[in-house]
Image (cartoon, rainbow over all chains, first blue to last red; front, side, top):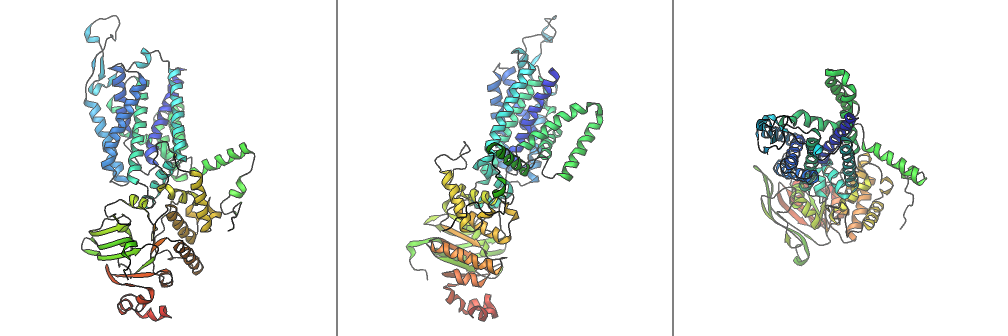
Length: 330
Length: 260
């Protein structure tokens, strides 16, 4: 059972990561830098809980804040770059962060021995990032007796909270303004939208969300190294959005679920997993360019649900091209 | 012309825009009074669209001064200028193509609504009234029936009208139209002229770039002629039509046809 709790937790974390890509995706910015923010969130919050004994909630928040600050620092100069150039800049950022966490060491000696029968000081673990050896013994969950099931439940609640955020955002003027920037930057400026502000804002929010995911990941795995946060991971996150669908926030959920579950279910296929992944990716590119879930699908489903609730068939008069229900005469 | 300096809405003085060695605009002075319809005509490459781009903040002038309602707007961004009350359409129609007609116009209102509100919904702004405004605009331009269609599904004439609708949703004091009649059928052009005349009668100041002489000369109170980035002539449509320099540079032999 604990295995499935871990799978559920990973699904939640991957969903949050997919949304972190989606946030800047809404303004048309393709970020491959999310693994970097994920790493910053993971190391920052794990340092706070493991070294300084913070509670996990404020530590996660600080991880998000740290990632958002770095996100702002990256976004403001690089948003002059367009399209692919920006994407390449974010890739470079991931490498920088990976190398930094591969090499830094700080922290303190642990108070517990790894081997309980030995009181030898050399057996005391190092608490904190230890260069290439990574950050081990992030034991907040065991220390506070949080079972995998409880942790998975909290993560599901958090996913719901982020889902509500995106649901509201997509229906607000702010969300539409972001979409407008994505579709046509010049026309967006022409109707008075500050395109640079919107892009930086969406990018920073995406970074903060990746920071949250990083914190959750570090505490779940109890062991992270700089090398975990590499380019394949960042490409994977983008794949969740591209394959699931980048037009609504539902798409990234589906993408994350598929790509977390598929490797678990298809464990027998072993090394063919990567080939399966490649085939799935190609098939999506060929057959569904906008991803598995498109905006039109969501709209149709919403209309159907609305109809079911109100008991009225609203499809008729609202159909595009049909005459207005109440033609106004002056 | 050039009388009544106190009610000048847009005042362009000594405006130059150079792209490398090319002088797209060279020391141009244009002023537009409150409530008038000003036509800008000129051959291709005369710098007409550059005037619009510089005025609306999409490109920075090399030198010169632009004043709108008395205050300088030369260094402001496109978004700020839009919020000050200058709205424009584009030569090739620029719509939010994947969004519906209704959403396009609704987005135009973001100048009035506080769209950056962190609570994602504008407080202190009557959203219901704004929605009613959208519907009124769509009705006025006769595209209400297509309000749920995507912008890219519209006919070209409807796209043009939708773009004007969206520009009007920003509640502009000055509307800049970049070739509003190009690509329209004669019927659509007639309808466009009627619509623009209605706006003008309602007191809106309009500057339009136009190649269609019937539209330009028919709608404008005053015409400015540009040629190679320089001001060639200005005056009432009648004056411009009879200006020998204009006839030579732009109208050429077709002047008789226009006069007729």
